[in-house]
Image (tube, rainbow, N blue to C red; front, side):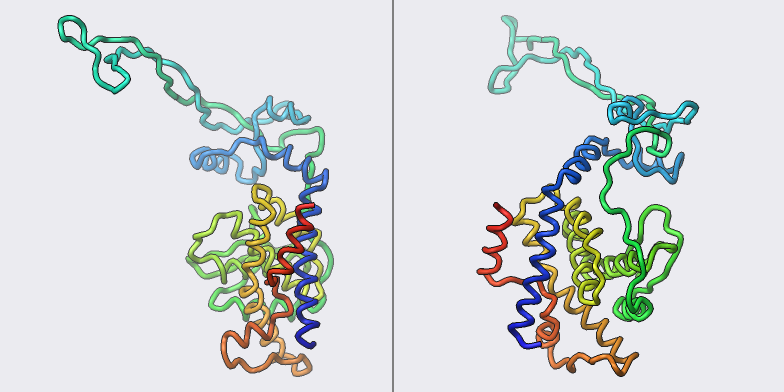
Length: 329
């Protein structure tokens, strides 16, 4: 593939990713999804622990009346999950009256003048919430929740991922709360067992990207998730695996608070991670399968990155301006 063909492929893949995310952003289904989920209360760490201790498999919780407003009814006999609910109240305090400069106001005898001020205070009461599994009614809007089907060269790609992940281990385990995770303290990547080959590969690539990009965790959670999923999408595409049905909505859901140019900047910044991971995968495949074309010997890091430029979403200024104009239409 000559440099011009590589550039065309690079730009088409990046544009496909951005346009796919934009289509999700503007779809009615995505708007309905945000409307449904945006009003759920964000629980404190203390309440999150309480919820987990009482119902470890809880996924989405809300109060009785909140579920009714969303078209769902808590089933009769369901046991509520106890949490602490804040309660605001007012108290009357006798305080020293002060002038506009903050100085005490004195009476004719030189004594501070007192006044009654009403101030807000907060306490907590025990309240109850219910998980969505304890309710019946209107189905909530959903985005693609999982990929299905077999993945071409599944065993070879997974072996390559294990090679590229080093020094992290990669294992399949019973993960109740997610499709996978990256544990920096124990240097391991865990994938939920029992998923399809397509979902397993995509999740493994996502967590592999986390292991290479986010040990310092200086970026926001939104940025980390967008970066990891973008890397997973581009590498999967390179191996002929289409994860767009899952990746586009996933990136859009994490980027819903970002402006298009901010999302573009994040996606454009992950090219080096995608290229170095892909190089390691191709290197492993070449070692295991002599018929697989081996990448050129690494002379320098830059030559390694240039070798894999075909999947890079880095744009020259003309391309960036063109795509930005399309996203703003």
